[in-house]
Every structure is written in C-alpha cells, then in structure tokens.
Amino acid sequence: MISVKNLNKRFGKTVAVKNFDLHVKKNAIHGLIGPEASGKSTVLGILSTLIRPDSGEVTINDIPLAKGSRIRKLVGFVPKTPQLPLDFTARRLVSFSASLHGLQDRNMIQTTLKQTGLDAVADQSLDRFSQAMIKNVATAIALVHSPQVLLLDEPMAGIDPVSQKRLRELLLSYGRTVLITGQDLDTIDGLCSSITVLRSGSVMVDDELASLRQRAGKGALEIKLVDVGQTQKMLLELQKHGARASVNGESVYVQFSSESEIPNIIRTAACSADIMYARSVKLSIEDVFSRFNAESR
Amino acid sequence: MLNMKGFIFLVYNECRKTIKASIPSYFWFILLISISTYSLSIEKYAEISIDRSLLTLKTGGSPTADVLLFITSFAVSSTSDVISGKAPQIVFPASIGVIFFMIFPMMLGLTLMSKFIIKKSTASIAGEKEKKTLYLLASSPLKRSAIYTGKFAGIFLLTLPMIFFIYLASLWVFAGIFSSAPDLSKKILETSAITAFFFISAGMLLSVTLKHEKNAAWAGTKIVTAAALLTTAWLTLPFLEFLMNLTNNRTDFLTYFEKITIVSPFTLDLMSVHSPATSEINLGILIIASFIFFISGMVMFTGQDIEA
Image (cartoon, rainbow over all chains, first blue to last red; front, side, top):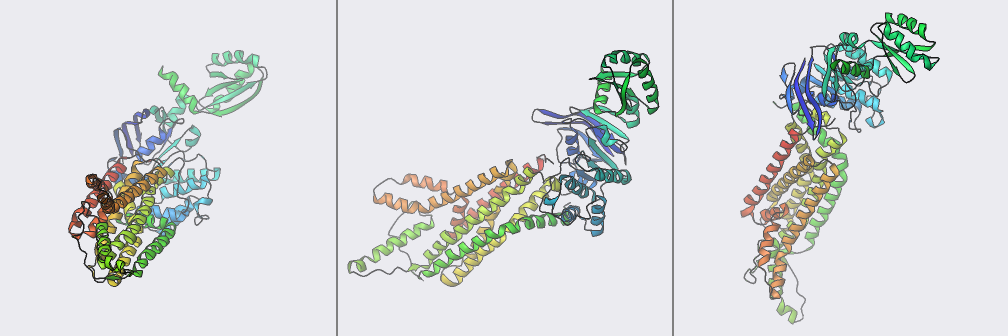
C-alpha cells in the first residue's frame, strides 16, 4: 500500500510536484498518467527514496519514507531510461543486485532472468544489448528480491511488443502492489484498476478506471466525410441526438461510453452526410484533459 | 543495522571494476620507486656526524637543512685536500641517505599514489552520477552512508599495494643500505596510509561536490600538484636562505613562507618522518582534516537527489 499526502518537490525554480496526493491499495496495479514533465518520474523518484521531497507525508506499507533502508527492501524500481554499467553481464548485474539485498540464490536469479526474457543472453556483456534489452535487465534487477511494491517508470516505452506482452503478463500475475507510469491510457489499458492523472505536478483526476471511462467516454469514433462542406450539418445532427461531437481538421470525433452506441452514431451521421470512413479511436490523455478541464470550469 | 553482506559485495565490486585499469599504474609505480630506491645504493654511506655549528638557519625544520649543513661541512673539511690538489671523496652520512630516501623514493611514491587516488575517488560518485548508474546502489537497502563508506573502502583497498610497496622499499633500505640509521619503515608505512586516507577523503568530497567527473578530476589533480609544489618550495627554503644570507639579503619573509608550505600534506608527511618527535601532531592534523572531508562528503551525499 502506498499513501502520499500533500507531496511537494521543487528543483530550483521549477515546481515538479505540487500538493500531490496518492493512495494505492495493497496488491493493486495503479497507473500514474500524464504528459512529459508532469511530475511522474519525480513522484517515483521520491517513492524509491532517490529524491528527497520538500514536504509531505509518504508511507509505503505503513513505513514512513524517512526509514529509507526499510522502504528500499520493499520496493523495486525501474527508471524510464535505465543506465547500467556496460562492462557487466546481465547475470552478474542481477546477481550483484541480489547480493545488495543479502540474497545469493542462483535458482531465484535464473528464474528472474527467465521471467524477463534474458535467459538466452544472460552471460553477454551489456554493451551488446539494445536499450530495450537493458530495460529488461533493469526490470530483472528490480524483481530479483521479490519486492512488495514495484515502481515502474514508463515500462512499455522503448521495448518490443513481445517484451511488452511478457511484462503485462508478469505484472498481472505478480499479485503485489504496482505503480506504473505512462504518457497515455494505452500503457495501462487492461492492466490498471485505478489511475491518477497528473498535469504540471498536480493531480487532475484520481479514480477507478471504469468510473473514469464512464465520465470521459470509453473512446471516440472518427468520421471522415466525402464532402467536407457537410461537416457542420452532420455535427448539428449528431449534437441534436445527444452525441458528444467535435471537429478536428477534416474529421469529426464523436465520443462514446459503450461500443453498442457506435451503430446509432453512424446511422445518425449517415442521415445527414456522405461518410468516407468511420473508425474507432481510443480515449487519449488529451480527451481526459479536455473533459476534466471543461468540468472544472 | 548495516546489511553486512551487501556492504561487502559493494566493496568487492568497487575493487573489481577498477582493478584491471589500475595495473598499468601499479607497474609504473613499482618501476619508478624501485629505480629511485636502487639508485641510493650506488652511493657510499657511513656513520658520520654533521657539524651543526657551521650554519644557523631560520628555516631549519626542513630535512634539506641537514643536507645543506653536510655539504657546507664537507666543503670546509675538504678545503685542504683541494688546495693540495687531491680530489675529495664524498661519503654521505647514513642520516643524509635517509633524507635522500625521504625526498626521492618516498615523496615520489606518495605523489604518484595521491594522483592515482584522486583519479579513482573523483570518479567514484561524480562519474556514476554523470552516467546515471548510481541509482543501482542508491535504490538498494544500503544506506547512503554505507555506500559512501563502501566506495571509500574500495579505493583504499586498491591503494594498499602502493602503500605496501613503499613500506617494502623502506624495509630494504633500513635493513641494508642505512642499517646504522634508526628504522623509520613503520613510520613511513603509517604516513603513507594516512596520506592515502587524506586524499581519498578529499577526492570523494570533490566527487560529491562537483557535478562532472572531469571537473572533479581536474580540481583534484591541481590540488595534488599544488601540494607537491609547496613541498618542493619547503625543501628548497634552506638553500634559498643560505644564498640570500651570502648576498646579504633579508630572509624574514622566508619564515612566513615556510608556514604556508606546511599546508601541504606532503610537507606534513616529510616532517613527521624526519622528526618523529613532532609526527604525532603532524599526522594528527592530516587525520583530523581527513575526517572532516570524509564526514562532510558523506553528509552531502546523504542529502543529495540521485537522478535515474
């Protein structure tokens, strides 16, 4: 369980995190979503005790952040772009990390390497690894001591689809508290039960994912017309039927909460304009921002 | 409570990752100290006392004051031989031989060792912060103070071969060439170890304070060079005073200058080996300075944010 109250952190004149609250339930997978420079990495840096907060209360499994050594025994951290000493092999690095935790079980190290897809390359030097493989090594380092809490900073960024799938399966079966960050909702789709949306260091939304989708809409339908001149007419027709529609460029985007709404939307649109194509677009972070910005006014 | 296993692995890893790169430094160190130590054996030494009444020097604390006294004494005593056309045969007193050992092999060894230490210690924190690999240690259960101490211990272990070799060289000279002189090998060992401690503490403080490894290494190298230059100046002071006395110039400023040169750790090293009576104070100053640097560096490192 992670509990954060009124966390603040400033780097010089830049406010990285401001009045940040977070509550992650025990054994839940929680997403921390936000655009670049929204404070996600800073929050994870503070939780992993690498960064000292200016103020605020943080506890992990009821242990205060001040007890850094005890916190670090519980926590496994994977940075966004991990930098590792390249003259090590994956096996030696994971073994070294295990040793720092007072562990030397070779079977456990081998299992961790296998879980992260590194068993075939474990004895190769890291200078031959791609950035994606180095990220897998960093994940193995974080997992080797079976931490109670996993902190993953944009774990899906820069890794191949096979590794992404492996990581998702691993996280879903892990059964412990996981805090994962990302820049879009795709990262946490099918993974997180709750999310916190950050912008400029402050919490914008903190909710169960199902509830958030209901409030912001599950997705959007992009409709492109044969004759762009018919756009306004179609837009008015859709809005008359209660659809949340907006124009962006030459396309009209219509938000929906359930996929069962799609046939009705297309039927309504087709009555007022000639449709070139219609395709489903996933709910984006910008949609969440615009939705919740509008709500807050 | 310290995670002892983790700490030992940290120290082992710190040694392991740089031992290969240290081998050339060890090779040159051994070669240069061996040559400079062996060259002392070419001269003849005897139990000869030095007439100290010939000269009175204000800067007489330096070991080279004894060398100057001997040269003056030799010049005076061999005047009659020179006048009668005989070439004087110089035989050094064992005490002068010991001073030669202090100034050449020992100082060379300490300077080379200090430069080696500065290179390793400035890379220990600044280098890893720059490469962003420090998160690996900082996110482990080890406390920051343990990480700092572990890195310190690793560098000290890497320096041990050099300290040991200086000790071996001193054992050889005091057992063989200067067997009639008091055995200072243990004092030299003590001095070398404390000097290593001093420069590791200073180097690591620089490493924590400065962001970039290059800047820290540059600053550290300049400190070692400045210290060596100050000690060289201290060693030449008696000769300078002698020359200025010969030309009837004032020499008061030299005593003030002498006080400045004592700031150098190498000067304190030479003073503690040359004058065992004052070595407790001199080495004590080095130890206190080392602890201040060590604690300052550790406190700063503990409060710093680590970028991952």
